[in-house]
Length: 263
Ligand code: 4AZ
Image 1 (cartoon, protein in one colour):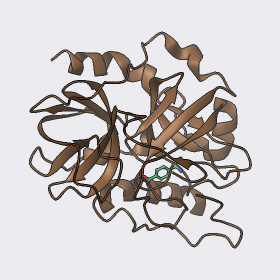
Image 2 (cartoon, helix red, strand yellow):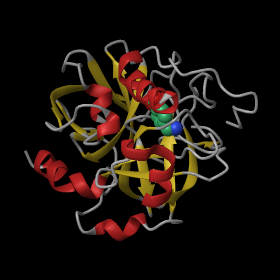
Image 3 (cartoon, helix red, strand yellow):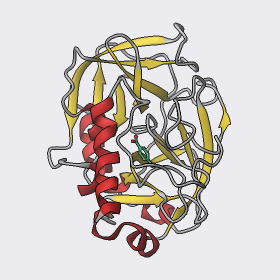
């Protein structure tokens, strides 16, 4: 039970800490924890990932990621914006560094949260923000409902974000990226039991750990062949052996997202 409690806490923490993205309620890391610096990735830029958005508080402190899928539409995690209002958040594009002042700060005109969303470990972790003004950046394509074959085990996926570079570490000032293999449903069920809802989630990571999303990466993209296929959602700690990251399975919610993109 302790393990599952920790999972629930870490998933809850993402939403609760918001601006204080460095704080977590996770249990003590094991002695061999904290592998390398996202965890295990490399630095990149919003020029390389122009659709990569910071979700920030009103003071432009980043607490989640998001993906621009149309000039005025941003896909993120429901747990990132649950409890927020259109005036409490901003979307910042074109800003590679958390301490930068460049790029475009967008106001949010509407927050759509999947009405079925309750908790990240229950699934349905998707939201769409409608911006008051369009972003001058190239959006990312996102999956169609029929693209389920993309999630074949072993497929290489790309993760991107400003999150912490180790399980209890601090956020990265510069945007980071890494690649991780998609994990089979059976393997992910072995890791997470009934908290893994295969219809709504997909896991990615190495069996040995070492590369993963972490606190502050939530809401950001899991890309497969350059197409938005998942949303960073939750996991047991970060980059731990046997506990891959869990992402919203976007094919399941693609039609709902399209409804929002077209409205
Ligand atoms: C978080 O709290 C979070 N290792 C994001 C991703 C993962 C765990 C926690 C997956 O934002």
